[in-house]
Length: 307
Length: 312
Image (cartoon, rainbow over all chains, first blue to last red; front, side, top):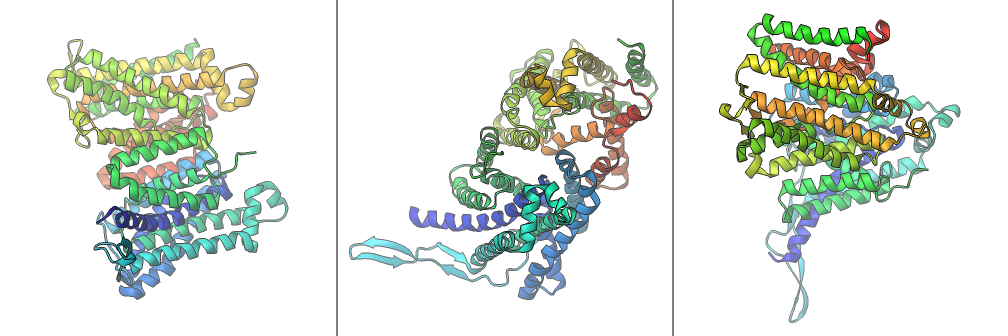
């Protein structure tokens, strides 16, 4: 294959990664933006989404119906679980940033170990509801002007296109929710000034529980969407957490548009970087870069400097 | 120094010496490990408990001490004494570099930056398979593990040396936190703005705390590798950064003897629970959540709050 089609293939795969990453990072960013706490257990909600997708799809009889059932039910289940964690633990440590990190590390261990005990150490797939291969054309400039041809291997499945589309729809929905609805207004008010919001009669604790559940639900949705492409495994949360941390930090903590741009950047460059470097070296470079971005530009690339 | 403080800490060391002659073999071996890990926890506590800086990347200092000791010993045939010093120096150097960079951030960003550096360090160990042997790690030959003519494969010598190292770390920590330097660290923890207003150079004090903490952790790592003959990448994983946090929280942050009791309690909690269930991480997770909820001050911290106000 020539370089051009190869790059396009890498970019398409990167776009799928970016779509899933954007969903997950949007959840993390939302929680950080509104509640000002870092949820270390976020990766486990993603893992739980994938694992529960396997369970729910199995219970609903598999096939397309099973997948749809998982897509609807799993984010709700995980969201409810997160709300329960918020009310029983986070609320009681008073959303203190450091104690919340310690508590969510504890929740991470609990979720991981319970999954290991209930689901086992195996990686398991869920069948995609539809999975046609779509060959893609490439333009070639020959003697008689540009012409289209179909290079061997340049293709994408309809399911991957669906993942990209679904992520775009959900993120657009999230944006509408945050900017055009009453709930979004309440969330943004809480984000700007917790005390004043409370003084105006906003039930801040309920907003926090809702935001935490919404964030976890987004991660779980990302998990459900990825299962037909990657299998569900109880340790899959760690890498995903690291990547979404990277996205949220580079995009600027708490900024949704920044998160989206960073997800595209990281998703695309991840596909292309791992072509040129060994995966371990690529990870080291990415990790160090993020640390240095935080050191020298703590507000992120798109974030505003703190007032 | 206050007599009762001296009596308490000296008493603990004397008790540990007495246990050397009393304990059955299994617990004797456990306690040697616990004392070395307690040195790591003491180092972590210096930064977290006294200076108020929560690092999520201390495994890199522990592992730097371990690999800084193990690699020259394994590849260059350096004597155990020099290799031990090389390990401590490696950890101190790494702590200086990490401190210079990471201390530009505060709060949550500091945690994430240390976490990222530590992750990069762990991945680097995996990448340099030629020298570190990656996941497998280095197994140190018994013949190399001789410190000043003392054979470290002998459990009795191991216990006494672990006790010696622990005594050294405990008294160094006690001395440090009771000096003006230690008081300034506490002032920085309680109110950095006021400490700065009083004319203290906050950055330098924090940097000194990071380096000291790195040295303690590196010494523990080097000693652990030397005593138990294994240098492995698993000691650089995220879990091994979480453990000292857990130990210190459990034992009591900002107390000198707290870290030891934290390690002791956690070690036996996992030891006993892993006999009942393979899910020891579940125990660790539940312990963390319960701790943040009900005993933010830890065991010794709770004792200090209720009865012994004078505890350093």
